Length: 392
Image (cartoon, rainbow, N blue to C red; front, side):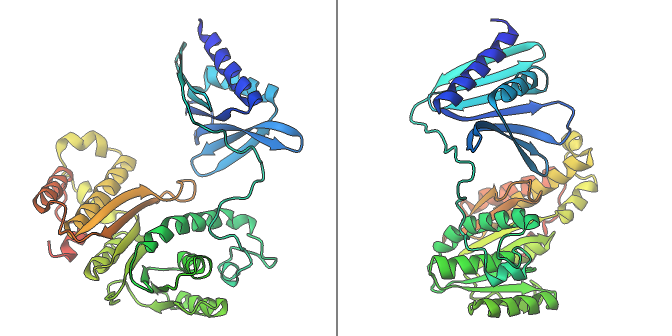
């Protein structure tokens, strides 16, 4: 079978799956065309008023674009794209997977049978599974997410999706806290998007009493937040003016901080550890403290190719900073996970460190201390800021 035949075989399999209702999705990757920010394309079947269509989701660095095509248009676009612009494609159906790979003029196609897989719904306008479904709440309007008619504003759709995603992640974590009602402290609360969303969901949807306190330096945001909480009838939600380090977190059952800049994230971690909070969750923002030490040129010389370029240095600084944060949390009796909590289409600072108190004094104190020392030596780090707060 020659190379063009492999593309034709893939497209025939796609067309058959589309017609039979067994298509799960087709994902194109390895893009090297004329659009520098295009990362990948995902194709699925949808039902529209005009009939069944191929729905293409073009995934760019900072946005997604969706376009729908009938079959002749879709297959023509795919044929041309696979021949010149995309190096890989993964076809998933209810009965088999098919992997396409292209290296120059050479093409490979591999088929693998699967069992027990179901095709997704093709309903184009099906209801989204979101924790927050009622959009006419006063707090949504006060925060600029909904308009006067109670509908989510067009320019706030991404923010509303992000808020719902955060509630999806945080609500089950808070559900494991035994205290009734739990006290959740949000360090550097800003406008309190997460606080209002969490309180609304936990108190009115889940019907679990909860206390949420947002700590914020800017007094105007504190005043606005408290006024909106009162107008919403959220008696257990309040905001307090002050810095993270000045706040006495004693009694906090959960300490959270979203995008507290640089070492402010460490301040929040320190307060959570000091309070022996059952849950600590932070989404770090910028990693200047460690990056400055790495820029001083004390890192292992073998890392020079990885640190030579500014963008790679930034990523390595993020990885080293957050790895040390996770290890220091483990050293203080927390079970720690790090994962992406929202798509990078919404924010490039999208990693979440989640630490849950599990009664241990470190999984293996000597082993963790050794790992910390090795990472610091490798990257030329004298002392992590959180390490200094905790007493070295």
